[in-house]
Image (cartoon, rainbow over all chains, first blue to last red; front, side, top):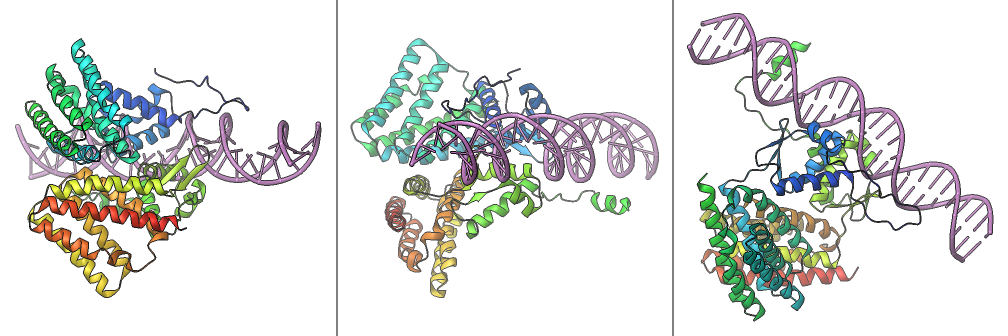
Amino acid sequence: MATFDSAARTIPGRLRVAVPSVAERVAQELRRQLAEGTLIPGARLTESTIAEDLGVSRNTVREAFAELASERLVVRHPNRGVFVASLGAEDIHDLYAVRRAIEVSAIRGGGSPDDVAAVRAAVEEGKRAAAAGDDEAGGTANQHFHGAIVALAGSHRLNTIMAQVLAEMRLFFHKAAADALFYQRYLPDNEKICEALEAGQLDRAGDLLLAYLDRSEDNLAEVHGRD
Amino acid sequence: MATFDSAARTIPGRLRVAVPSVAERVAQELRRQLAEGTLIPGARLTESTIAEDLGVSRNTVREAFAELASERLVVRHPNRGVFVASLGAEDIHDLYAVRRAIEVSAIRGGGSPDDVAAVRAAVEEGKRAAAAGDDEAGGTANQHFHGAIVALAGSHRLNTIMAQVLAEMRLFFHKAAADALFYQRYLPDNEKICEALEAGQLDRAGDLLLAYLDRSEDNLAEVHGRD
DNA sequence: ATCTACGGATTGTTCAACAATCCTTCGATT
DNA sequence: AATCGAAGGATTGTTGAACAATCCGTAGAT
């Protein structure tokens, strides 16, 4: 149903815009559905079904699966199929181990004024979302905040890793983060961390962030334990 | 005779050993050639050639390429082909940013006695290699050392990330690390870091490791600058 | 010398087929 | 009745061939 036809042809002398390959677009579409919650963890993804739905070949779906599997968004069970990744308690701990490493390291290294400003912007974005009572926006603002922190390090690879970690966590949130105050509770922390960062108190910012992450992990583990 | 086959395959209660898929084996083989240096950075990998050489289908090669590309060992140029990744100065800095984040975080968290013992074992392995004058073994011992440090965190994901980082760096070393004393130079550092770790002086171990990585990066950047 | 058109080669994608494997169902045996 | 094993169907894994789209080098034209 979400078939994409290409009206964007490249005329010889025309500007060549890098159009993603079909496999990449399939991966994008699946990623969207995963983040949106249309595909719930544990669900099975049948090659032929998706191929038909998206109007592409099975082989192309296969390539998309390979990409998503490398991002841990789906799991391949050999000869059985691919399933939407479902996270357990160990995964939560694991993901937070990665976040602790990356985020704390990034904030301890500081960053350019522009990068710091981006962190500040994310904090304000979160405040606005809270004021408007928009949980969805609050969640994305929170992710922007932590993404901006990692961006302080100015490392392409770290940004990629963080993006994948956040994508994985998003996969999990759909069941957990129904409660409204989930993000709002952390707003004061974000503010303090940002202030320390702006003041150049990097070690302090790192400590605050570390405490934040520990608390966040506990909170999430708790929520997860009660299903 | 079909009965011979069917009798061999149906052994009830037998443990099914997971045999890697063909695509995975192709990826493994390419990874091996990349680490070994048979495939040098910048080299082009033609689908049909590799398919013939390995006796597999072009589609299968394609899946292997997707996997290697997700590990950054090769890069895809749309409609042009895949090439062995060639690292530049920015990549060195980037890779060390990841290593700083992961390794320092891991060592600061300490680890179980077994994990610490693994670090010690890697140090001794390096000493033996140095005593034997085996540079190749010295290099792998060094990678074991840093791998063991990351393993302290006990995070599957961090281990995977580190393994990929090391694989990327291996790609680069083939041109750079021809000099014999490249690893030996760092042996005393490894020893000190390990001692601090064993003594439970985690912050100190982290600082030492950080200094080590900075120096290692400078060293590598220097070597890279002169080609 | 620059530009353009053409041709060969390679990639991107599809399709169809087949083997291998899994899951389920259905009998058959104890 | 419960267990075991043997078909049957469905899905994945892999292949091979085909075709369109794109890139690159080269030859001709201006």
